[in-house]
Image (cartoon, one colour):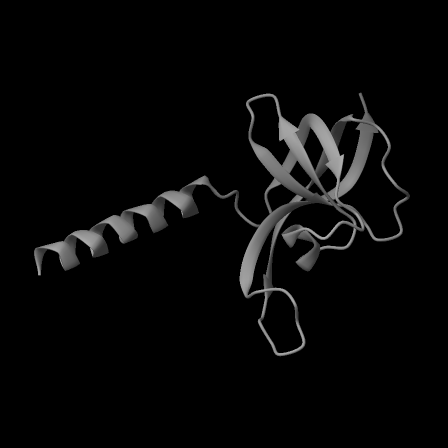
Length: 114
């Protein structure tokens, strides 16, 4: 019984910690870091956005970023992006190769190469 309660307490604490670290949907942000395009690459971010990439900030944190689908390929490695955080949910279904889950990413409004 004690182990069961301990597991529940640990799980509750970890869930609270992960939600605290997530940016809130609708929050505006300007971020600068090293960019890696994942457009056309089989990556779990592709389940949430087609023109997606990963921005590695100077503190080492990795932030998924989503550009408009009609945006041409981003070729610069260092980039500054402005946008709004969004959270997208994917449902698991028989024909969907992606598992069910949520992803919070920065929806890019504008960018500049640095």
